[in-house]
Image (tube, rainbow, N blue to C red; front, side, top):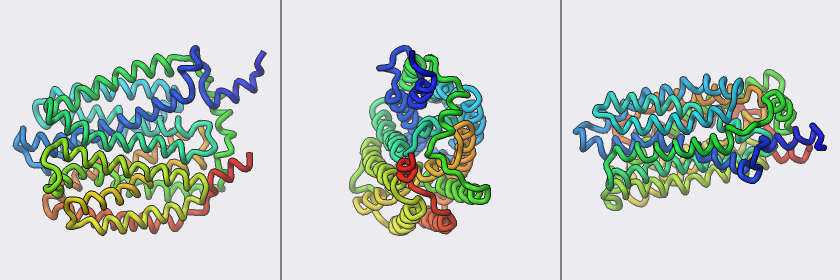
Length: 422
């Protein structure tokens, strides 16, 4: 006989399943990471389609087209809270299944659009299902772990590769099959993965929710703070999240168009532009791994300060650059933009309990995606009047605001201190 206490400890690592070798913690973690890849991929397909195909096929300007993505990003923000609430109250695995299948069907349906309004409707549904991922997936990554920096960094790399692949895969599909294929084939792939996820993970009996709450709420990775310090940490997290979301979306959404204009000596096709964007985003993804390693071993505040200081410097360098110099500086600023991502999630994981963590993460991502929604019309407005040089200067100013906020962050122990205490 195996004691109930031992089963509870094992269940923190993975739910009990009918095939332990297949439905393991590693398989669950991999599929959650793939979901992060797809989340960012689908949210950025239209940016490349608009910049490289519809401006020609529909005879509309870039600044005219990209505002049609705004409803999708508004839904991305608004539906984050109900997604987190349902995950905490019902099932994180069930919500992840809905994510895979829902976003895949929405993408495939968007390919049927015959007008900008119809594309906007398709992007709206993509945004609704994309809203599921972050409050649910990030909570699943944090769940039951003492050191969360590296797992969050690995998860973040998958998301960054989704950003990178959006421009590359979309560019290849545009050149070979047309822009509609960029929505259809990834959508059908997501549906297939969703069915596999349901079969391997979601349909298997897991530990009861109450038991999961009891076991994970006692994790040494949770830091006990008094109310005043907790409010202070959350205030810094939410502010840096909001401004950081604006920076992240402005850079990732506009980079294919920036390269279209500035890499005239290097890239002459949608595929070539996609390759350069892929290279930049893929190299920059290493930033999350570096920062994840550092915040597991050192206090968060000095790492955070170094990251935003580098953002200020590299954004200020970008105006006026073309060809290889533009590519190199793009790698540098994306390295620290991506590097910031795991910091706030680590802080949330350390000061929240598992049973309400998805809802706190939902609030954080509501702020992120609300500023993301404002970034789309902002990019269009700035581009139409001053071009991208002004956008980069504004990003440097936004990073400076985060710098000031981070200075108010109290000292938070690295995860190594929690591990030592166990």
